[in-house]
Length: 164
Ligand code: FES
Image (tube, rainbow, N blue to C red; front, side):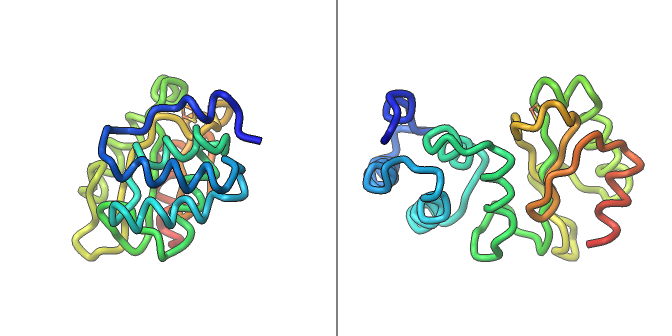
């Protein structure tokens, strides 16, 4: 059963395509197991999945943001913008921010010349930011190719990316 909260959520913009996404979610009963189908619908309509779209789908289906980012970055079919071979999402929500997310971003910029929203020149790695992955107890958290990592430090972030 769809919840009142799910039905009353506002889409990221007043773009009419969001109505089609809403219709799709309603047909699927706003159930968490409709996640992949809904992501397909969003990508078909918009061409890729950005942070606002993922956040909206997460809230609408009641699926934790970490899972939605995980699915969206795990399946190569889904396109985040811009698209590198591997994807690293750094959470900059409040808990992660005060626990060092900024130093993770600084380290990636310093060592790889990579800023949020960018891709390395060799197309290997895209860096994205999220507002909250729903893993605040593990702050600062990141998602690398669909896998959530917690209590990441500037030293361990590079180690995690070295193994891609
Ligand atoms: S603020 Fe980063 S996981 Fe919640």
